[in-house]
Length: 178
Image (cartoon, rainbow, N blue to C red; front, side, top):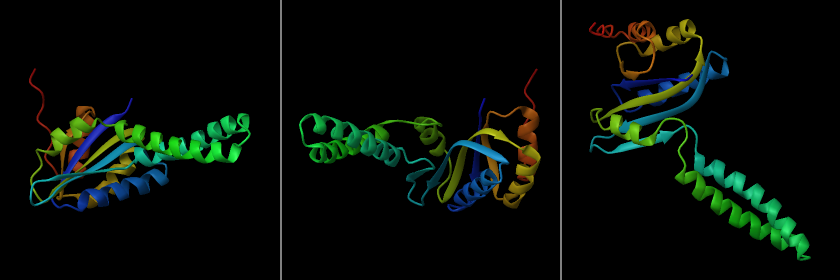
Protein backbone atom coordinates (compact mmCIF):
# COMPACT_ATOMS: atom_id res chain seq x y z
CA UNK A 1 0.00 0.00 0.00
CA UNK A 2 1.26 3.46 -0.89
CA UNK A 3 1.70 6.34 1.53
CA UNK A 4 0.74 9.92 0.71
CA UNK A 5 3.01 12.65 2.03
CA UNK A 6 2.42 16.37 1.49
CA UNK A 7 5.19 18.76 2.50
CA UNK A 8 4.89 22.55 2.35
CA UNK A 9 7.91 24.76 1.65
CA UNK A 10 8.67 28.41 2.40
CA UNK A 11 9.63 29.39 -1.16
CA UNK A 12 8.36 28.64 -4.66
CA UNK A 13 11.37 26.63 -5.82
CA UNK A 14 12.08 24.44 -2.76
CA UNK A 15 9.40 21.86 -3.65
CA UNK A 16 11.03 21.38 -7.05
CA UNK A 17 14.41 20.94 -5.35
CA UNK A 18 12.89 18.38 -2.98
CA UNK A 19 11.39 16.48 -5.92
CA UNK A 20 14.80 16.46 -7.59
CA UNK A 21 16.23 15.01 -4.39
CA UNK A 22 13.49 12.36 -4.33
CA UNK A 23 14.27 11.44 -7.94
CA UNK A 24 17.93 11.06 -6.96
CA UNK A 25 16.91 8.75 -4.10
CA UNK A 26 14.76 6.80 -6.55
CA UNK A 27 17.78 6.23 -8.81
CA UNK A 28 19.64 4.89 -5.77
CA UNK A 29 16.73 2.48 -5.07
CA UNK A 30 16.07 4.08 -1.68
CA UNK A 31 12.65 5.42 -2.66
CA UNK A 32 9.97 4.11 -5.00
CA UNK A 33 7.60 6.89 -6.09
CA UNK A 34 4.24 6.07 -7.61
CA UNK A 35 3.41 9.71 -8.32
CA UNK A 36 4.71 13.18 -7.45
CA UNK A 37 3.28 16.65 -8.00
CA UNK A 38 4.76 20.06 -7.25
CA UNK A 39 2.24 22.80 -6.47
CA UNK A 40 3.40 26.40 -6.65
CA UNK A 41 1.31 29.31 -5.43
CA UNK A 42 2.44 32.57 -7.00
CA UNK A 43 2.23 36.06 -5.49
CA UNK A 44 -1.10 36.66 -7.25
CA UNK A 45 -2.55 33.52 -5.63
CA UNK A 46 -2.67 31.31 -8.74
CA UNK A 47 -1.89 27.62 -8.40
CA UNK A 48 0.47 25.90 -10.82
CA UNK A 49 0.66 22.09 -10.85
CA UNK A 50 3.72 20.33 -12.23
CA UNK A 51 2.94 16.65 -12.70
CA UNK A 52 5.86 14.24 -12.71
CA UNK A 53 4.08 12.00 -15.22
CA UNK A 54 2.84 13.81 -18.33
CA UNK A 55 -0.10 11.62 -19.35
CA UNK A 56 -0.77 13.68 -22.47
CA UNK A 57 2.65 12.77 -23.93
CA UNK A 58 2.35 9.15 -22.84
CA UNK A 59 -1.10 8.87 -24.44
CA UNK A 60 0.04 10.53 -27.64
CA UNK A 61 3.04 8.19 -27.93
CA UNK A 62 0.96 5.10 -27.32
CA UNK A 63 -1.72 6.32 -29.75
CA UNK A 64 0.89 7.09 -32.40
CA UNK A 65 2.29 3.57 -32.37
CA UNK A 66 -0.96 1.67 -31.98
CA UNK A 67 -2.73 3.89 -34.55
CA UNK A 68 0.15 3.40 -36.98
CA UNK A 69 -0.02 -0.36 -36.58
CA UNK A 70 -3.78 -0.62 -37.05
CA UNK A 71 -3.72 1.96 -39.84
CA UNK A 72 -1.07 -0.01 -41.74
CA UNK A 73 -3.07 -3.20 -41.23
CA UNK A 74 -6.26 -1.63 -42.58
CA UNK A 75 -4.26 0.05 -45.36
CA UNK A 76 -2.82 -3.33 -46.31
CA UNK A 77 -6.35 -4.62 -46.78
CA UNK A 78 -7.07 -1.64 -49.04
CA UNK A 79 -3.76 -2.09 -50.90
CA UNK A 80 -2.24 1.15 -49.55
CA UNK A 81 -0.45 0.40 -46.23
CA UNK A 82 1.59 3.63 -46.24
CA UNK A 83 -1.51 5.86 -46.37
CA UNK A 84 -3.15 3.72 -43.70
CA UNK A 85 -0.05 3.98 -41.49
CA UNK A 86 0.09 7.78 -41.80
CA UNK A 87 -3.64 8.28 -41.23
CA UNK A 88 -3.71 5.79 -38.36
CA UNK A 89 -0.70 7.42 -36.70
CA UNK A 90 -2.24 10.89 -36.87
CA UNK A 91 -5.62 9.78 -35.57
CA UNK A 92 -4.03 7.55 -32.90
CA UNK A 93 -1.72 10.28 -31.61
CA UNK A 94 -4.57 12.77 -31.37
CA UNK A 95 -6.89 10.33 -29.64
CA UNK A 96 -4.12 9.25 -27.27
CA UNK A 97 -3.28 12.84 -26.34
CA UNK A 98 -6.95 13.60 -25.60
CA UNK A 99 -7.30 10.42 -23.55
CA UNK A 100 -4.13 11.27 -21.62
CA UNK A 101 -5.31 14.80 -20.90
CA UNK A 102 -8.64 13.55 -19.58
CA UNK A 103 -7.20 10.79 -17.38
CA UNK A 104 -5.85 11.07 -13.85
CA UNK A 105 -3.04 8.99 -12.45
CA UNK A 106 -1.87 8.56 -8.87
CA UNK A 107 -2.84 11.43 -6.60
CA UNK A 108 -6.31 12.85 -7.27
CA UNK A 109 -6.08 16.27 -8.94
CA UNK A 110 -9.09 17.62 -7.04
CA UNK A 111 -7.40 16.74 -3.73
CA UNK A 112 -4.19 18.42 -4.89
CA UNK A 113 -6.04 21.59 -5.87
CA UNK A 114 -8.09 21.76 -2.66
CA UNK A 115 -5.07 21.29 -0.38
CA UNK A 116 -2.90 23.49 -2.63
CA UNK A 117 -5.41 26.31 -2.23
CA UNK A 118 -4.59 26.42 1.51
CA UNK A 119 -0.88 27.18 1.11
CA UNK A 120 0.21 30.83 1.36
CA UNK A 121 1.28 32.92 -1.63
CA UNK A 122 4.92 32.64 -2.77
CA UNK A 123 5.24 29.13 -1.35
CA UNK A 124 5.12 25.61 -2.73
CA UNK A 125 4.18 22.08 -1.74
CA UNK A 126 5.31 18.62 -2.78
CA UNK A 127 2.76 15.82 -3.00
CA UNK A 128 4.36 12.37 -3.19
CA UNK A 129 2.83 8.93 -3.29
CA UNK A 130 5.45 6.48 -2.03
CA UNK A 131 5.25 2.74 -2.75
CA UNK A 132 8.35 1.73 -0.79
CA UNK A 133 11.24 3.45 0.93
CA UNK A 134 14.27 3.01 3.14
CA UNK A 135 13.07 5.48 5.82
CA UNK A 136 16.34 5.98 7.71
CA UNK A 137 18.32 6.85 4.58
CA UNK A 138 15.54 8.98 3.08
CA UNK A 139 15.03 10.95 6.29
CA UNK A 140 18.77 11.59 6.57
CA UNK A 141 18.73 13.02 3.06
CA UNK A 142 15.65 15.18 3.68
CA UNK A 143 17.35 16.89 6.63
CA UNK A 144 18.77 19.38 4.10
CA UNK A 145 15.31 21.00 4.08
CA UNK A 146 15.21 21.29 7.89
CA UNK A 147 13.58 24.52 9.00
CA UNK A 148 12.23 25.35 5.52
CA UNK A 149 9.59 22.62 5.26
CA UNK A 150 6.55 21.43 7.18
CA UNK A 151 4.38 18.35 6.96
CA UNK A 152 0.92 19.33 5.74
CA UNK A 153 -0.67 15.89 5.52
CA UNK A 154 0.37 12.24 5.53
CA UNK A 155 -1.07 8.75 5.61
CA UNK A 156 1.97 7.52 7.55
CA UNK A 157 1.71 5.85 10.92
CA UNK A 158 1.98 8.32 13.84
CA UNK A 159 5.48 7.02 14.65
CA UNK A 160 6.76 7.50 11.08
CA UNK A 161 5.05 10.87 10.77
CA UNK A 162 6.79 12.06 13.94
CA UNK A 163 10.14 10.83 12.54
CA UNK A 164 9.49 12.82 9.34
CA UNK A 165 8.52 15.91 11.32
CA UNK A 166 11.69 15.60 13.43
CA UNK A 167 13.84 15.29 10.29
CA UNK A 168 12.29 18.51 8.95
CA UNK A 169 12.76 20.31 12.29
CA UNK A 170 9.06 20.44 13.05
CA UNK A 171 7.42 19.65 16.36
CA UNK A 172 5.79 16.24 16.67
CA UNK A 173 2.15 15.89 15.71
CA UNK A 174 -0.30 16.08 18.62
CA UNK A 175 -1.34 12.72 19.99
CA UNK A 176 -4.91 11.71 19.13
CA UNK A 177 -7.43 11.97 21.93
CA UNK A 178 -8.36 8.68 23.54
